[in-house]
Image 1 (tube, rainbow, N blue to C red):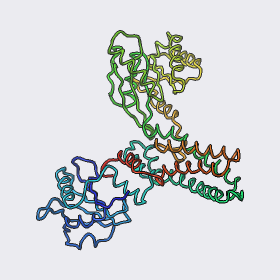
Image 2: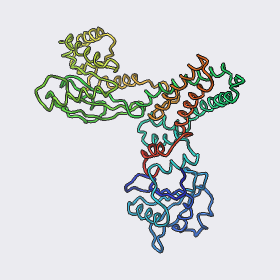
Image 3: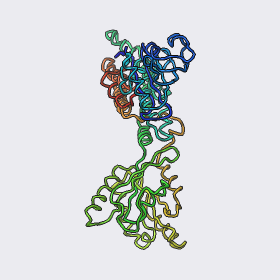
Image 4: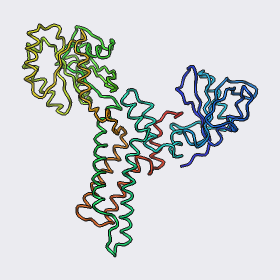
Amino acid sequence: MMYHDTIVALATASGAGAVAIIRVSGKDAITICNTLFKSVKKQKALSNQKTHTIHLGHVMDGARTIDEVLVSIFKNPRSYTGEDVVEIQCHGSIYIQQEIIQLLLRSGCRMADAGEFTLRAFLNGKLDLSQAEAVADLISSDNEASHQIAMQQMRGGFSSEIARLREELLNFASLIELELDFAEEDVEFADRTQFRELIKRITFVLKRLIDSFAVGNVIKNGIPVAIVGEPNVGKSTLLNALLNEDRAIVSDIAGTTRDTIEDELVIDGIGFRFIDTAGIRETKDVVEGIGIKKTFEKIEQAQVVLYLFDAVQFISNFEAFKVEIEKIKNKYPLKPLLIIPNKIDKLTEVQTSELEVNLKTIENSKYLLLSAKQNKGIEELKNQLLSFVNTGALRNNETIVTNTRHYDALLKAFEEIQKVQHGLDINLSSDLMALDIREALYQFGLITGQVSNDELLGNIFANFCIGK
């Protein structure tokens, strides 16, 4: 796949703003822009200027001045795409943006496809495929953790680890392939002891990367947290307290929330998506009943469940509430469940002590006392939510997998490596073992782009924004 034409697109967000940047890339980028640009100092042609320089002047449509601009020049191969690149910084008027882009199109450019600048960077060897995908993740990152992971991947942390393993495996694969040429002599060029050590090391790394996807996926997409409980126990008040705004309607009337309300909060760099659900109770109200049905659907989707109770009612009817808690625990045994008696501001010290004694009788459960209305216990709740997320790998700056395509390729590579391990254990012939090694190498290559095809690249870069 080769691109020889010159492309143009708006590199900044669409809409009016203080400034806008129009990016041009391709073999004729500098030549085309030179015909439209008039320097205020009447300098020599842009093609004769040094790379990585900025020039003040005007974009001209014949005798008509469109705008005063700054033009930045990046000559190949020292540019983002590896081609000649020109970036025109103009005033942010939508009219000006369109006039300059239309002028460039009439002068020989074509509109860039989604992600085509980054695609060209990949094709020209400026980025490998996993780094290119990290560009999209970096653009969409909305919290510190997802930003940190995307930056690490862009710097090549993930791809370099995969590339090292692939290179070592490729060396052994070459020796085993060589053995096939001397099959009649029954010789071994690949040291089986060293090969076992390599397979053991690859297995360890693959397993660690595969396991990291569980953390990476929630960091990238946010951790869904369902706030559930009976009507009027303070679920909406808790959501408002967490978000520090009146997001949900609060009322003394039971059943006020008839649908789910969602909003996101970043705690210590980790995104949490809170879902305020309709109260769970028996009801004849059709609309409220639909809301309760959705509540159970949201619990299915959530990774953490906050089960709220009215603290006063909890004390007076503890055994009944204990049964409800066990139902939720049995129905969703793998989901972290935090029991939260709310409205503790209405309890006396004696009642609070009694409540804690009762809570300790519920086996394998975490609990937290709070008053959402008075903002008591909110910070403790945030800390508790963070404890449900294994951020150790993130804190230690380890490689974390967030991309589903990478995860799928790692799983398949792991499966093939297991086959190679089994082949070593049973002393499988070199020709059969070579097949499994080739497939593992293929899966490694899919991640970094050493193995790619037009369909794969089309699927990846179609998700990019135009201009990147």
